[in-house]
Image (spheres, rainbow, N blue to C red):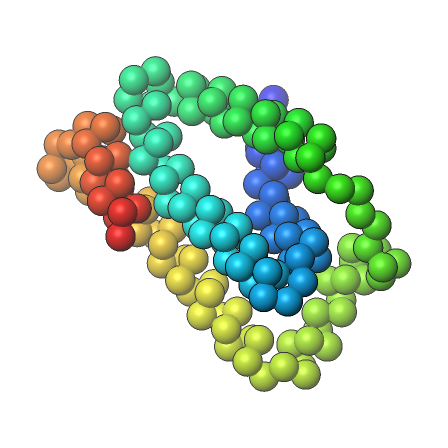
Length: 159
């Protein structure tokens, strides 16, 4: 059951990686940049607010409620996306493994891509390390509750 739930969660967490290229495809020119920036802002805000929201839900209703709330939100979002987004067949007829292999050419041809990928991976790692360690320290050494840790995290989200 755990493996099934984890796989389901992993599949549902790919929305940003699918939605952002779709938005880029749906708009042209200056509108494209604005649309992608808007979606990215929403995604980053959601990522930043997700942890404090989960902590508050867990403090009030327990950790299982976080997963139930997530399931409900993902289900509602999935229905809306299926109903509202246009059908699209990519012009490139390549399987997923082929797309992944094609990234080698991009990495070799564009010198900035590997460097920036490393920067982003490092920032992602630092973000995750901090937010794994911070609640442990805040609850263990400072005796904060989950709700108080969530308030601490919301200060970071405001930034």
